[in-house]
Length: 310
Ligand code: ADP
Ligand code: MG
Image (cartoon, rainbow, N blue to C red; front, top):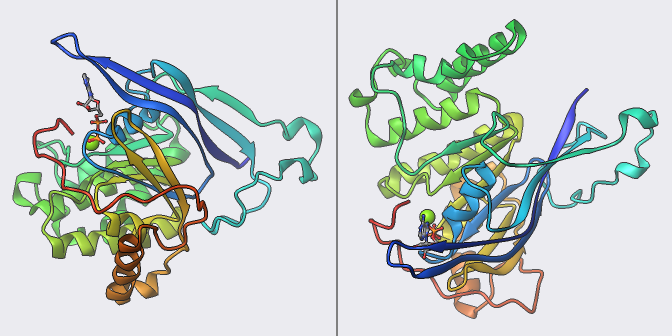
C-alpha cells in the first residue's frame, strides 16, 4: 500500500566537544514536522548548525538530545501538490479499514534508502561511467521490480538533467555542473522519499547554479519527494522553498519558520521579480510571505568560509 512519510524533528539538540575541550552548542531545541512532498530550505549564517541538522536527519550520528523520526501513514489521496494547504495529516477522516490506517513511526538511528544525500562536492565513483554511477542503486535492489523501476528512473533522469549524451563519459571528463547533475540524478534514481541537499549548488558559477535550481524544481515535479535543502543564500532559499527555515548561530536554533508561496516553474523565467521580492522583503526586516510576525529575519548572510568542513 502506498504510504506518505512525515519527518518529525523533535526537540533536537547537539553539543560537540572540540579537540581543545571547548563545548559547541550546534543545535538547541529544534522541532519541525516536515510533511511529504515539501521543499523545505534551511538558511542561515555559517556555523548555525545547518549541516549538523541535515546529518542527524540523514542518520549519520544520533543527536545529543531529542529524536528524529519517520512517520509513515497510509496515503489518504494521491494529492501531493507541495502546497502548504494540506499540511495537516487529516488521517482520522480517512475511510479505509482500521487495520490499514495506523501510522507507523520509527526513530532514525542510521542512514537508510528512504533518505538520499546530495553533498556540496559531487561524490561520484571515478571508475564508473556517468550511466553506471546513476544506475548504481538498481544494482543493490532487492527484487526485480525495484531493480527495473530504478533502471528506468535512471535512464529518465539522465535525460532530465541533460546528460544522455554524456552518459558514457567518466566523472573527470565532466564540468562541475555536469558532475553535480550526475550526483543529483544518482541520488534520485534510488527513488528516496526524502532528499537531503547540503549547499549542492554553492560551488558552481552563478549561471550554472541558476540552471540547476530550475532543473531541480522540474525534477521535483516528477515524483515530488520531500526535499530539505541547505543554503546560505536567502535568494535561493526563497526561490526553491515551499517553506523557509531561518536559523541563527550560538546556539544553533530556528529563528523563523516561513511558509513561502510556491513559485511555479513557469515563473522561474521571471527570476528578477522573485529576487526583488525577496530582497525588498529582507531589507524591510521581514521576508516575503512571513506568517509568524514575532520572528525577525536576519540581514543577508556572509558566504560560508570555504574551510568549515561542509
Ligand atoms: P553550518 O552548516 O550551518 O555552517 P555546522 O552544522 O557545520 O554549521 O556547524 C555548527 C557548529 O558546530 C559550528 O560551530 C561547527 O564548528 C561545530 N561543529 C560541527 N561539527 C563538529 C564536530 N564534529 N566537532 C566539533 N564541532 C563541530
Ligand atoms: Mg554547512
